[in-house]
Image 1 (spheres, rainbow, N blue to C red):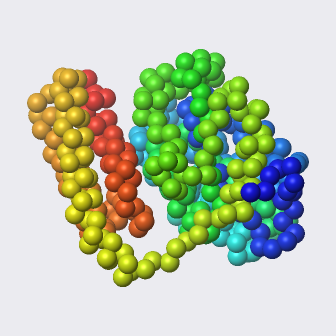
Image 2 (cartoon, one colour):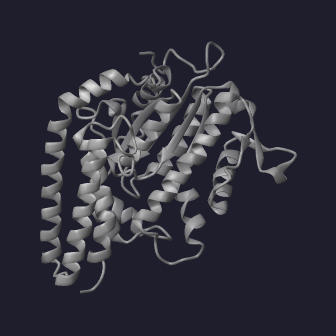
Length: 358
């Protein structure tokens, strides 16, 4: 692996290198400060084009428009998917060497914040015919190695997997940086912010946090954990080496071998379905126990049980038939991925019952 000491990414030889870096960790772990410092250093030392996309800067104002409450998890999920679509539009323009047009279906305020984010980092500029919502790529964006750093909590594995899928779709480099900050430190920092999150939200996120697990998930092998705040500033060489490795070893999109996939499905589908069924049943049972402990009213318990069992049945049908209602990634064959997605959807259902006074 080339190191930061002997490699400078000028982008003058061979195809342009492009990559996505997921920067994850609890709120107030220091991600945004770290991302800004990292981007500045990579531009100065490596000569790269770097775009930091901070989800908090792009999404909240566009959605809330002055509202006092945070959007529901299901609404956040839609916003995250929409933002990934914006990123894909930008990547397609870079890869094809063409102008970037606005998607026909978009949240206007969020799209404008996204455009401003790219403009401020010298990646695009408005065309003369701006009324047509077209944007041109800067020389920096097309002539240098390009790294997009996605700054968000990404506390569920499934959230990060969506970014990996985008990298694989376009044969981009992919890596993850996890800022591991003590919960109490995050709470203290958060309390000093002008618009602080509720402490309960951060504590809940801390309990649900799924850290990168390279030993379990092959797609997470390009991951690095940094101790925040002390360890992050002192690991610049290690971080740069990880990013260089990601750019030089893009994720390859494997062509589907349908015959082999069918054979594999016959061999392992029974075992996977059984394991998933047992695990999902246990999750539903545990969730119902928690609901009873929360003194949810009997008629609501019945409704909750119906929703959870319906969700379980739909997940198993997805897994059995290869549908895409919930398991939207064709390569998802690991039971741990199924469980992670199920937890995400289950939590969206549960909050309707646990968040109300009984």
